[in-house]
Length: 198
Image 1 (cartoon, rainbow, N blue to C red):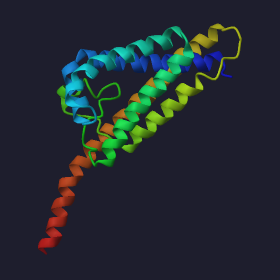
Image 2 (image 1 turned 90 degrees about the vertical axis):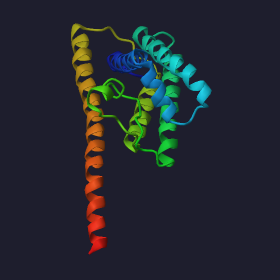
Image 3 (image 1 turned 180 degrees about the vertical axis):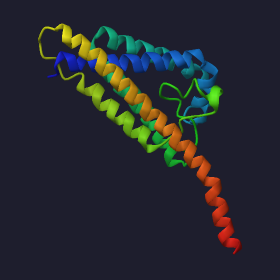
Image 4 (image 1 turned 90 degrees about the horizontal axis):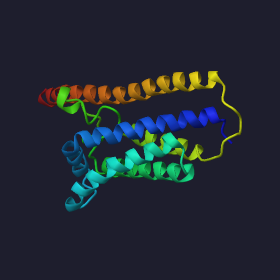
């Protein structure tokens, strides 16, 4: 059984994550369609349809967290959606296609045009999704009945802000890691070529 403070914190985080992700995808649907196509999982004739459905589903699930409506369904839908994303990433990593944009997080869709940074696939993203799946399942474990005090609302706001910053920082670290690796590869290739010439 979860304390209602912990449940509301989890619900707030998933609401923000899913609603913002869905809104970004709707705001640049053609870009999201391209990202979806790059995964090479769906038949090409379904990519356009799925690119319209996924953002709406994300927003609806996010609203389910906001209103805590049928939380067992909302929790299962969240876990299923995140598992689908994890599987798609895992399949492409096994194919050696780690260089594609994952299309996830708060910034991967909207900053591509601004500075060229993308969030490439990595096992860290798969682990992140697995942790989020565990969190979604945990939210369905029941809530301990107790009344909320004013300090609880303050705690939810403060903890939500802290976790949003931590989540954004984690995503940015992955983007930076990808950028650093892309800079190092040409240097390593040149160094290896120099050794062969010697």
